[in-house]
Amino acid sequence: MARAPKKNYWEDALTIEEVEVAPPGPGEVRVKITHTALCHTDAFTLSGDDAEGKFPCILGHEAAGVVESIGEGVTHVSVGDHVIPCYQAECFPEDQASDHCPRCRGYRVGKTNLCGKIRPFTGAGVMKSDGASRFTATSDGTKLWHYMGTSTFSQYTVLHGESVAKVRKDAPLDKVNLLGCGLATGWGAVENTAAVEPGSSCAIFGLGTVGLAVIEACQKAGAKRIIGVDVDPAKFELAAQFGATEFINPRDAPDTPVQKTIVDATGGGVDYSFECVGSVELMRSALECTHIGWGQSIIIGVAGAGQEISTRPFQLVTGRVWKGTAFGGFKSRTQVPELVDKYMAGEVKIDEYITHSLPLSQINKAFELMHEGKSLRCVIEMH
Ligand code: NAD
Ligand code: AHE
Ligand code: ZN
Image (cartoon, rainbow, N blue to C red; front, side, top):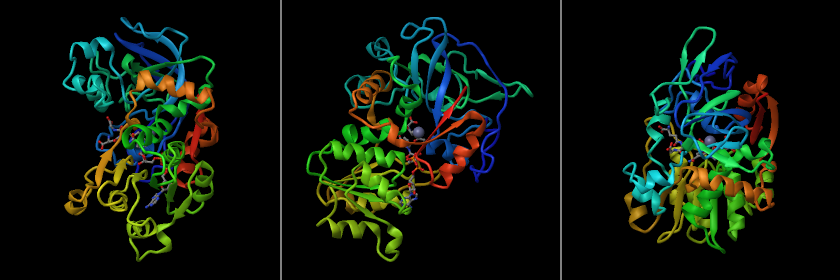
């Protein structure tokens, strides 16, 4: 449990406490979480940088598990189904048919994967049916906020039905949990948001799990040059295994802006760049290292409350495009099961992103490893 924000999130990150998890309300699903991983966003929120962070709460959003019980009206999953919680919910066809919310029109025609039905409630840390939390700390009766509509750092959690993707039972839950965030995001940023074409040049800023997933997808898309940028050179060897063709450590040339280094090395700039760190300064570099006239830069990293991006408008006037992506543009409930199929068919990597596996009792160790840059994904065994 995250009782309060901590700037130094890696120092005794969470308390491990007994929590009462209420039965699912109408349209809700209670899930036994078998495995969850840490994503950088959990640390970001714990650090207090998240404008939407609410405490005390139960963090976690990259998980898999088994349906334990369902609330009234739930028909798309049954007890015993294997599922992946999805922080980007996806409403049901009947919602879209009736223009349930102002976003439905764009959602139906594929202009966005951001479903507006559940998002206000996941942002507020409560369930839609009654505006309340399902978590209570046993020790002192404190109500705990939900996080991202998932709260997977709990052995049981309650989800909106719209946030529950049913997956095939032969898929290993200790692997496919990574599809709940980082991998889907990186792959989708390349395939859906940028739509990288064969022969392209790409620069990836930040070679953590998300950045490596971007590299994997760039290689699959046929990109010819894949430039990995990181301040930790230990990441370069790994990035090469995922498909990066060359590397830049901005600290090697502290007096030269990294965008200049890339523009010079590529005869004018890359076709596509991806920011996978969450630094507004790097977001500017990522935009400005793309080619005049057509370069596209995709923001994936999440920046702290109050921070803003800037560039000379001339960068955009002259044809560069700034885009962002949430969950890689995938519609979650329907497309996550397709990603599971791809993994089972050997078309995408997952195992290679899992560097550590720890029991729930050692979850704070996972935050330390992340802070030290020693892990990609650390999977927590929840039972
Ligand atoms: P991570 O901690 O595993 O990786 C971050 C990488 O960035 C590390 O390799 C680190 O060495 C590198 N780095 C740090 N500062 C740098 C700098 N100044 N220049 C170059 N490299 C630098 O994180 P992750 O889990 O891969 O997540 C990456 C970012 O993506 C985070 O901001 C996270 O919150 C965000 N995210 C966004 C979405 C989305 O849907 N938009 C989904 C998942 C994660
Ligand atoms: N709450 C933050 C923004 C956090 C954010 O942008 N989250 C990403 C997912 S990070 C997953 O690891 C996202 O998908 N955002 C879109 C959404 O609907 O949440 C803030 O700045 O307030
Ligand atoms: Zn995440």
